[in-house]
Amino acid sequence: MKLIHCPKCKSDEYVKSGVIKGRQRFKCTACGYHFTVFKEGKNIDPYYVVKSLQLYIEGISFREIERILGVSHVSVMNWVRQYGIQRPENLEYHPTYKVLNHVELKDLMADREALKSAGFMVTELGDKFMVIRWERFRKTSVY
Image (tube, rainbow, N blue to C red; front, side, top):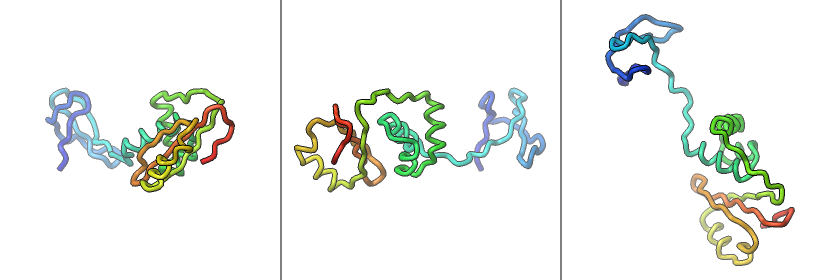
């Protein structure tokens, strides 16, 4: 059985105090506060929240983040709003991204021409890697 704590004073001394909307109600004997045990609901791993925000800052759209990570674009929008994240405004470049396995990433990094005149960000994406690339002073980017 899970140990229940009072949300107000964090005491574990409580008594049952009825049922509301099908959920057990408790009364804290330390402070007299009435509370119910909250459902955990659908928790999302913080890894996906951080990755989503990183990708958003790099200029990837909400729908693209949804396709890449498998997290709802609405959730990503809510996290951006919740944490007050603002994407830097720079219309000079448009980032491109590719999802690569470790062999493809090694080959890309070995190609000296691919590393010239571009910025890279490599981030882990499950068992693969995402390479976000932005080229300076160019309107289009080619891998």
